[in-house]
Image 1 (cartoon, protein in one colour):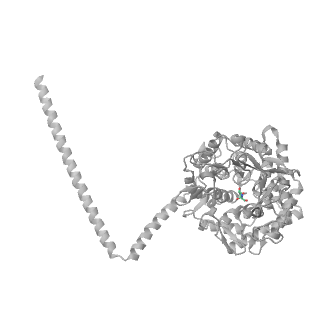
Image 2 (cartoon, rainbow, N blue to C red; image 1 turned 120 degrees about the vertical axis):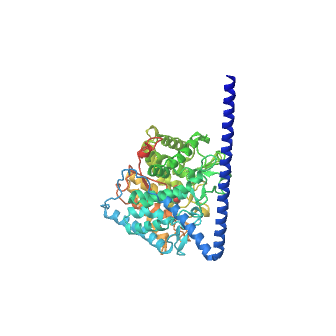
Image 3 (cartoon, helix red, strand yellow; image 1 turned 180 degrees about the vertical axis):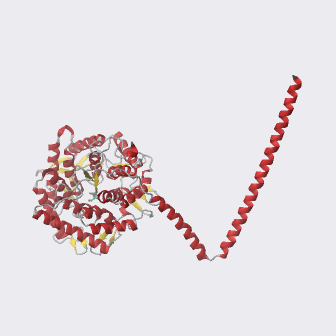
Length: 568
Ligand code: DMJ
């Protein structure tokens, strides 16, 4: 027994020694192989370097360029991969008969003529630039579009051209987008503006025309905006560099805050992006914002305009239904409408917000005009902006489905705001509305400060007329819209396009020399729709984003994207 153990132990020792020797040999061979490889690589690199030295500087440059092109081509190939097919929602009312009433037809033709004038001059003098300077007859841009030529007017105008039947002009725009619209640029843009004008414009053009290029460009651009959401809270920065993805906020915003109307106006476009691509990333980003807002305390039930994306805390307690707040409320309502009224969470948030606004911000002036003031650190400023005038249309649009069946009340509120905003136009010399107007110290619906007397071709008042027309068919809304159209044609039209004016109370106002892209996207589109039949883009099937780009209703369940099979 004992002898057997000794034999076994000896065998095991021998095996161990043999194994160790084998491993050492293998390691040595491996090291040798590696040394040889390093030597060979080194020699190859030396040879290549010697070869390179023989080449001229230009040859070397050309080689580097070829390498770069190869990489760029690879990236382009990746970017233009076709997107997965999804069922297109029911697209109703893209075309409609001409109005039977001759007078209405003529008015509509006049609006179309104005659109042609704006477009042709932009094409001639500003093509490819973001906007047009109609007096200087050259391109124009502002910091919201960054420092590159992204053809904002082309993208913003596309769907208006389409519904007006200006198909040659539409194709010119499509061709430019196809060949020139490039987002790999070192340019810092506004996330909000790029979303509502570019992504909204491209998506609407896609749904109306069915041309894939628009969908593809919208998705490429959205990918470039995503890094803006990389903040500690997921509340996006106001601006993002399209190339580096670095984001930051406006220097003027309260304590480094993001703006409610900016990060709160992404929902419609982002839900459509997820629907079309089958990728939930966009949907998740906007739902995260919503959930975060839902959890926060709201002073007096009001949403302040500023929120710090690092700390998740409110900035200054200012609340506005005009600039800085406006389209956040609009998108709560429209999220509900766009989901075929399935997204009841959004509807509830809208109802709660509107009730608080009515309680704290809406008042009647001594002269009987209903206005929406601004809440600033605990007191009400009796001033209303042109931007706030969109709210008349919003109240009317949200009347159906309102809490406690207050449809009549909200339609009436919409009518009162429309009336007030009309008064702000009617009390000027040019019959065009000022940027902001007061209800204070005996003044009603008039601007006081010189720097609030301008009109920059904004759409909000006409937008409200159109919604009120669709819901009531009261002819006064067409009449008011026509008054505005005539005033624009008389005082803003110049031979090189349309320009804003600096003082609506002066009979010979100076021009600001800017043809804003929203003039083509919104002002002229709402005017055209005001003189069209209701079956053109019916409101049961289409929801207009805040830049007037129509997006179709999707039958979406509360928290899922059931319209897209990729989600089932
Ligand atoms: C447009 O770009 C949009 O309507 C936005 O929501 C606010 N205002 C401008 C036009 O005035």
